[in-house]
Image (cartoon, rainbow, N blue to C red; front, side, top):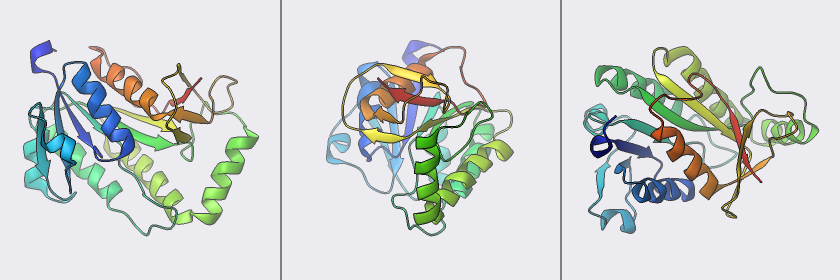
Length: 220
């Protein structure tokens, strides 16, 4: 990957975490592209950012913004605990198809500890938190699971990573810990700024790490 041609496409750039990912990517000399229904003023006024506004089902606009991208990063997800069916599982399946057609291989997407991993161990705190979401925000929980299932079933052949987090915090920066629930290292909270640093570092790697995997990250 040549330095002058690397580009990163961010879905969810208007969110607090997405904004930090955009800032971190620009700081590391990436060509940044963003796609969404609305554009923040600081992004619209920045000539270093390529902007496309559209919906998650606009295939023509999605194809145009995906074309020529080196790495896709998505921090899209349910915005509340009582959401109904969201378009995200279908959206990701659509993105996977467009990635293959446009020869884009790498995607990193945000998930949570509601999505399990074979390497996870028992954690009382995590079990309690996920159980509360399942009980009081079941529709959000089901959407998170459906997104993970979309990656498992439909992202074959792509270099995909679902990075799982617990609480997103506005502290930091701190040290990023990567691991699995209950391993004695991974915490329950992660600083948004640390998410941004970890994601951009993962995107930078010539040989992708965590391909087809769902690691957890936290801050310490």
